[in-house]
Amino acid sequence: MNFDEAINTHIAWKKKLRDFILNRVGAYDVNVVCQDNLCEFGKWLYVEGGRKYASFPKFNELISVHAKFHKLAADILIKAQEGKKEEALKMLEEKSDYSQCSSKCIMLIEKIKLKSKMVA
Image (cartoon, rainbow, N blue to C red; front, side):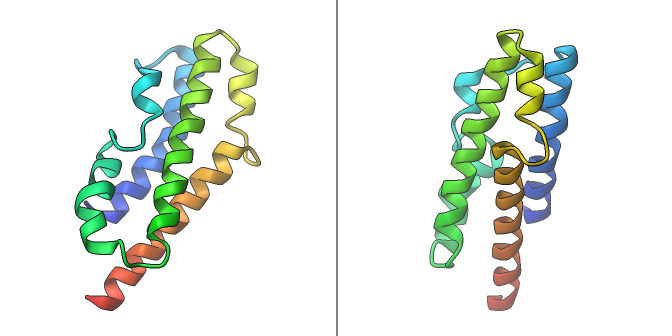
């Protein structure tokens, strides 16, 4: 797994969610989105990433924040599927739990990426 790809994928989620809320672009299964081990990064995180980086200080925090990210994304999708566009859009705002969690997830990926270069 490429750390930069993981970061870009997480950044792209905000646009995907906004596009779904506003225009129903994409098809998402909330029961899949809410699970942190089904996306490519999550699969990597629990297998190869765990083997390589589980001893890194921020690794367990990343697992926890990544799981929260998926729960929050699923919550936004639920609101959108219920037709509550304004509520769903509000959940994407800059100071929202989702945005803060997304930023933290990206920051932790960057920290682990940096640490992996230091020990390589």
